[in-house]
Image 1 (cartoon, rainbow, N blue to C red):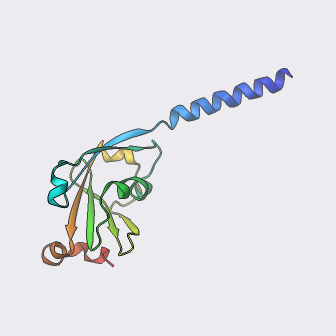
Image 2: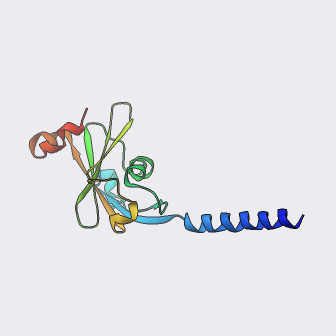
Length: 138
C-alpha cells in the first residue's frame, strides 16, 4: 500500500513539473490591414499564445493562420523582430491553408524574438514587384 502511494506521488510530481514546463507563452503579433473597415482596429495587434517547445511550422499552421484573414490570391509574409522573413502563409479558393518556412531549419517560436509582423501581398503586387512570391500562389 505504501509503495503504490509513493508511485502516485511521483506521478503527480512528474505531471506538475510537465505542466509547469509546458505553460503557454505569448508572442506579440501585428498584421497589415486588409480593408478600410479593418483600419478601425489598426494596428491589428494581438498576443498569440504558444507552447515553449512549439516549432515555427506548427505555430504558423495552428496559430498564425487563424490570426491573419483568409484571403485567396495573396501571400502573408511573416517577419520576425529583426524584419527577416521566417515564413509564408497562403490560402486556396477553399480557404485551405499552406504554410512554408523561410528559415534553413524549423526553428522554435521563442527564437523569433518576442514579436512578429504579418505583411500581405496581393496577386497584383506580386506580379508587379514581388515575383519571388509567385511560386507560393497556386
